[in-house]
Image (cartoon, rainbow, N blue to C red):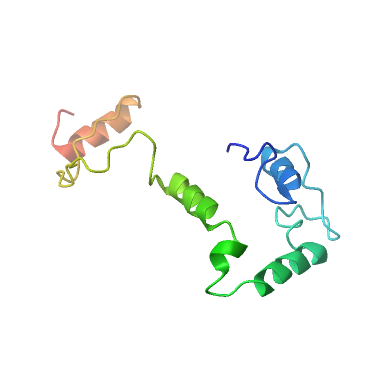
Amino acid sequence: MKRRDGGGVRGGSGPALWGRLTGDAGPGPDDEDRIRLDGWEMKPDVQAAVRAAWDRVDAETIASGADTGWFRDEVGRLYGWDVPGVDYGVAAETTVPWPADVRPTTCTSAATARVNAASGGAA
């Protein structure tokens, strides 16, 4: 994950979130001695800030109240959309034989024998 704006995720909680994601800030146990990665976002002050942010927007103003462009870019990066350098206009082969004829490159001789037997190859 790359830092954005020099401090991790955008917003006031950026450095704290970045520390949790990178492990620089230990998660710390909760009051029941559990390590919860969502502990910081469940704190009452954080929940109040989120609630206040949602109260400021509606269907018409969501784009101005939230960084929807950043969200779309991050989801796209996560799922492999809009990857720089990929020409999405070029036709790609989408029909491939199944099951694919894939041979393991490193495995035990017993595993190789099972794969070969299943695919009709040499035992």
